[in-house]
Length: 207
Image 1: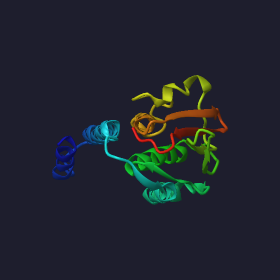
Image 2: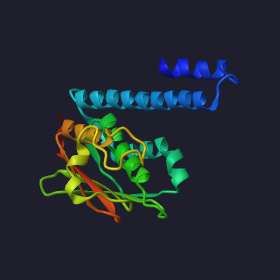
Image 3: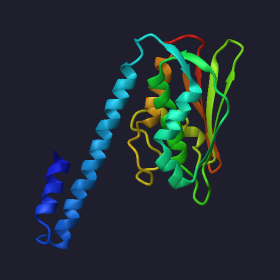
């Protein structure tokens, strides 16, 4: 409603507002969009946190990544990101959670690119002795200070203020999705050199 009325006012008052009034109206619209994005992210977080009671099915993780890359096609082309993906397994899981998980990790890798450096993102997977699958998403972006590697998975935790757009919920969604699937998530990073996010999923187990 805030956005709708501010946009209607902008159209109906064309030519009648002075510079200060136009700036004020633009500020209302800008913050209305931010609020809309935040509410959307909160709905997504709640949905992911509560999803998982349904039985798991066989999910081809290669297909999941293809879906994610299609969803991110615009930002990938704009940033000229180079994304590679090793062959991934078919696992017993919940597809919607895996899509959200990979999409947030790959999207963040593109968003937090280093200045003057083409984003390079690599997706891999290995299987531990206990049968768990360990996936990783590695980038060459700005990196994370080691003291913040736990902090970044909390809701509304952002390290770079408004320099980068976002709601501060993306990695919290990743954590919620992984925990719903009975796994864990962590990150290793060197500031200025990039980050590598890992998440492990137990074999044939769904929360």
